[in-house]
Image (tube, rainbow, N blue to C red; front, top):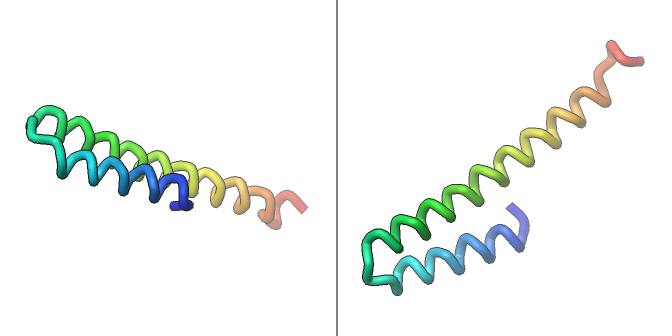
Amino acid sequence: MDDTQDGAVQQLAKMAEAEPAFINKAVLKAAQNLIREQTRRIDQAQQEIDGRIWSPEKW
């Protein structure tokens, strides 16, 4: 994760800790998980592109 995503996840964690309502905490935790999953998928897609570019079959 880069600094932007880390900062967003940390901010959401702080908000979740301060939130008294369970439903709001759940939404904030889900948002954290969404950011992490999107970051994972972006990294995976970038690695796939790199792998396809460097494939010896394409040379």
